Length: 309
Image (cartoon, rainbow, N blue to C red):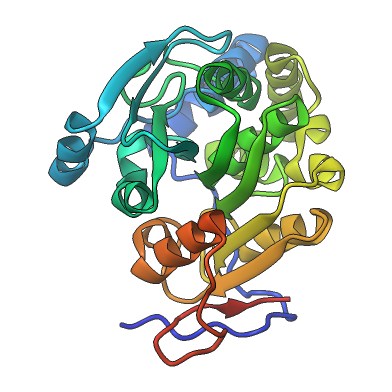
């Protein structure tokens, strides 16, 4: 089905993010552990929460990375592995939680054609990078180290949680001239809520888990929410978000855009959380924004994108 054209959005989406899918045996384990060893069970929940999955790359993604210049870099957040193409001004490409550099493959060739040097990363505990656990603070620390080598950046294009990590890094001094966030979260709490609901944790065990999680990160969750940090940002931001996203609500992308001075929100329909990242119109809009190209008029028949309020 062809996604419908976008329009100005004022009403809330009806999509609601479901609890995180957790195997039944694991929910049972946590139920038993809560009664027998609540602190140990909370510690296990904390470890699980900060352990991203590592999906396999598609063959075409691997082929593209193999054509790039590979690098490894030690960072305070753990080692990262990355690739770059071209020789112009650098544009940083960031995957989301449980993602990898190959997911940003559609952006590489168009950026190189426009004279940029795209730099894509496998962030700590993702893809080929080292580690099994990481957090937004570790990811942001890694981004600052990458910026010290490749920055300042002409642009930054981030998917999902990569946008939250980039916002924290920007708040700490990372420099990027123009920003594009695809399906970004505005709140950290939504991830916690999905996780707690998926495991079926009681209020008491959820509190124990949260206390341990915040202690491990070294920051309270509300301190690192993108919606709070956004108010202090001044780089131009384009937010692209699908109305039917069932991983990160469209309302979060809208909230982030409203909190970020001068940000622009553009919505899609029917692309969800992952297809939006490789949709040709979305790729074109993102790269056009970074390159400051003249875009097609909103609502043009050949476009599926239009501003959303």
